[in-house]
Length: 282
Image (cartoon, rainbow, N blue to C red):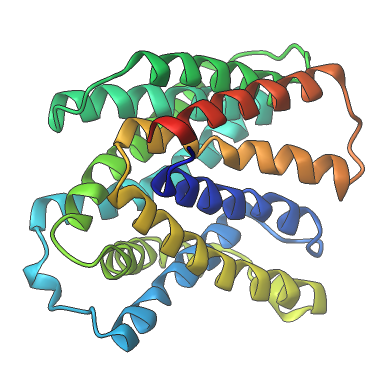
């Protein structure tokens, strides 16, 4: 039977996967950096939702060290990923980031939280990562920039650190409120980038449509994710988030009319099998 926690994480990652398509359909001048900041602001809206639910508590009551580490990891993962992709290309940068994240998260959760690493998790992770590699590579060769690979590895590590320490914060308070605080903190950290970024695209019709999609879907996705992570092992949740590139690939085929290569179809199949295995394990 499919378990609620992993399914909620899957739902969150599915919503995340729509952001790339939204960006591709946006106006000229849209940049990943400004999209990332809009997503952080969307996540910050969870503060209002948590306050309305009556689950908000003084921030000082949250565990300080896990909170700081989660905020730092969330804020750093975006620029690390974009820097890696800029130097290595989309294929290699994405492969390294999404391939390393689940493995690092599983290892980190085992070391920090003593969470077991199961055989089904390992098999599902191998299947999902293999599928992800096929999805983003398309069989194309690419040069490898060593520094870019390190940036991409840093992004994968930052996501793993976020998962481990966000779960520690979620366990001490309402998960939605805790996620809102983490997002708000990350938005504050990333805010200086808005001074240098050109955000004029937001004032266009298509730009406003992108923002109106990203803000609510980001908020909803982290309601799903925070509630799902609460009852799901970190290693399992990390692999379930590979539904993000899976969704992006499906939307690329269906909405953006990207070519349906054999590697893409094979990658989708492998990832679906791997994620179904994990949804049953929890």
